[in-house]
Image 1 (cartoon, rainbow, N blue to C red):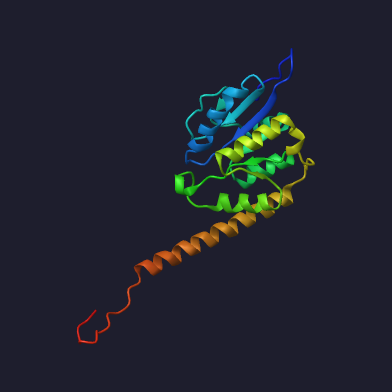
Image 2: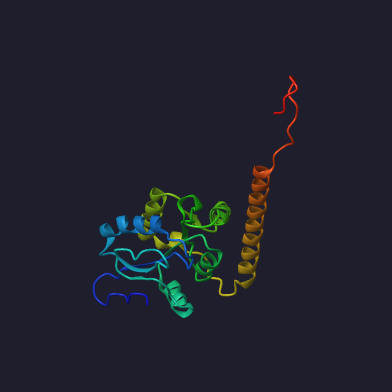
Length: 204
């Protein structure tokens, strides 16, 4: 469950980090979070859903959140950092957040393909997410968000079902294109032209 607000002194900013339920580990994001947190530990209350990734050495870590728990964490958070999953991104926006998105990178073993990167980059270009593909970009976004959380707020949209459906369909098309391209590459790799005679009459 999300951490309660402190009853005395200044209230901590609440940060929700969600990596989703994909079976691939996301150690890169967890490592960045561990590196960033000590300097702001007194100012930030964390809820970190780390999934199949190793448990980070920060407070508020848990592998999974149930649907209701995730809704509560989204509603109570001041800032949301998440992977590039369409459902998580749109859920964050539904609760009024401009999510800080770190898409999984397949070249690092974080996913099976690059659909999260493609999707997050398209949303980033449209201003629908704050894209953070590097450690520096993530730290800059978190620093800006803690200084002024309103920079990462959007109009809450409790009825975002159509947007979610459109986004899921878009990701489906991206994945289909990736699979088709991968199949074509494999076919070109397996294909061998018939041997043709060289000028001296030998086969080549």
